[in-house]
Amino acid sequence: MKNRLKVLRAERDWTQAQLAEALEVSRQTINAIEKGKFDPSLPLAFKAARLFNLTIEDIFHDEVETL
Image (cartoon, rainbow, N blue to C red; front, side, top):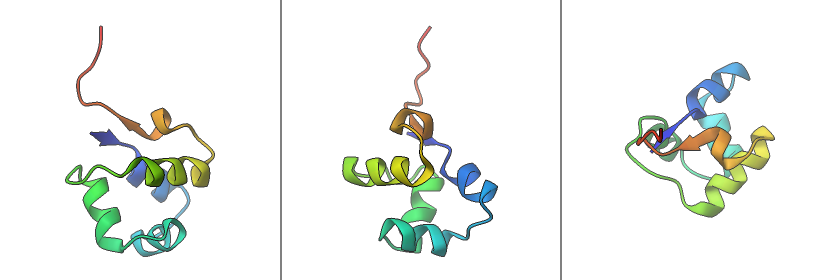
């Protein structure tokens, strides 16, 4: 799953550790999500969406593009 987490974090000048603290996960989890090596749970995706005041779809999207 692709995501915009790194871009959104950088726009706010947050470190991975700061974002991890806000989402109550480890920095390693944030790193893995940003690199596309880990897909967040639905509750974590909702928490990120609330934090950034966006929808889940604005942050996370499937790698398969629809026509």
